[in-house]
Amino acid sequence: QPTRRLHSTSRLSKSGNFLAGRSIFRPLEPLRTWYLFDMVKLKPDVVAEYRRSGYLLPTSNAPLRALSSEQAALARRQLETVESATGKPANSVLVNGHISHQWIHDIVTSPTILDAVEDLIGPDILVWAAQFWVKEPGSGSYVGWHQDGNYWGLEPYDLVTAWVAISDVTPQSGPMQFIAGSHLGDFLPHKETYSAENLLSRGQEIAFDKPLDPSRVVTAALKPGEFTLFNIRLAHGSPPNVSTDRRIGLAIRYMPTTTRSIRDIGDTAMCVRGVDRFHHFSPDLPPSCHLSADAAEAARQRSTKHNAAVSLDGADLDKFRQVSRQRERRNRPAHLTKTAKL
Image (cartoon, rainbow, N blue to C red; front, side, top):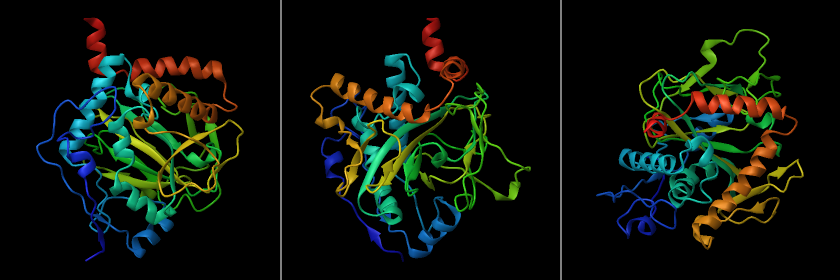
């Protein structure tokens, strides 16, 4: 049997509420049961597989589960409560929500996720960004094949993304897809399409010189609460959601404290485990450190502006603004559309 780490959940369970704390939106209801997850420490062969393939999926050797199905359902209700209250989709209003919303911060700092990440990048861990990726059913929206490290401006390339499923992620709902081993070579050439269907800021797409071999593509179907891990250099994307339900995932960008930004934009990050001895990034503070919900929201917006400066460096801003409006219209949540009609 693999070695296991067992974590106390008393910080979250004493109140009887899941993800309780200083937040603009409190939990809608308490959970009857708080599930303990005894995270399997990643065995050397699992870590070696990550080094070879560039990703990890939930398996018996690596049971990557951060939330129970009940907790994932409650997180979804929290997300949709925020959308209804603001009239904006989570894709925009909850970028870096771990700074302003305690329930998101609790997912980002889940010991289950951090234990796995620690086995891959070491004990001193920063979160550079956290963003919900929501695809509405039938919207036609997709994420083109791309490599994050090609344009994020972060070095060295040890950053790992944890993609946490909040909804059921099936082959029909537009799951994450990876090209195994694509992180090992040079960065592939990318083109900027500014397509309204592509959810990436500039519509980035890898400019393949020949058709992609389907046998190299790995599909990450996930149950609510499960997560996958992948390297910043790995080529990945996701097809449109042709199911009848929303596809909701939270992408959390973890990096060792040795990471540097090559752009002089005053970038920020939050230390979530260990100690930051290098201070390459201005610190993002958790929600409980802000004096009010308004102050936390202001801090979230400041951090989001830094991320946007990275993703839009050198972009055609007129094209970006135009296509952003088109993307928001085509990927607008159904419950917000119904509210607007009322």
